[in-house]
Image (tube, rainbow, N blue to C red; front, top):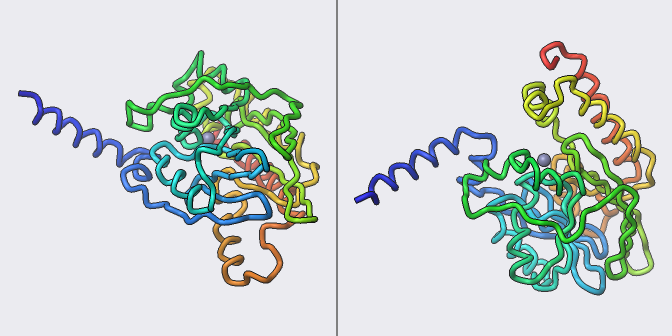
Length: 292
Ligand SMILES: [Zn+2]
């Protein structure tokens, strides 16, 4: 009889999970967040840690990222609650190939035939070095990587319904991080949106870089070059990759407190300021002997 042993092994796995970086977030999916309109046809449908944005293109819905592993039910609920039907999601553009941004990708593809997009270098990573996605840290053998329908390349200009997006590769956090620029519409008003697909320094740590075969830490220089490449894009609405990037929930709070006031998400300075802040933080990190 192995049921009892299987159960004990399961309890051991849960205990081990609690000690990992992501584990507590999955053991207690405590981050539900009500969806809300950011501006015009751009909605927030992510949780309180990992962003997911929904763009109503007038000819189908587009998601930027598909949420954390284990958070698919939350995402589906958020899309309904925002007043949309998840079956209308035609495209999912993935910021990069880490497990906390690809959670519902396979579900959407199987259920609704959604087309999945991912930067070409991360698509290659899925094929050749899939462990870099950290999917194994989801502690769920039912989670899996996907084969993208389209691999995004530098300079791609792609049209989805009424929305044309320009893509740049911004390697650093992963090799296949993408930046996206597009117009959002609210009646007659148009604003330029900017999105940067991954800022975390967790993948710039020395042990990590040595393990992936970059003992000279070139990835850090590449990260700096990526910031500089898109730093001067015109961005009136900076969309976060994680909520911490643009204080998504603080701005949402302002929206709730002053619904008739100026839109707290519209800020032409924020993109440049935040990219400069990451540059300065990285230079400091690189100068610190304990990181070398
Ligand atoms: Zn990541």
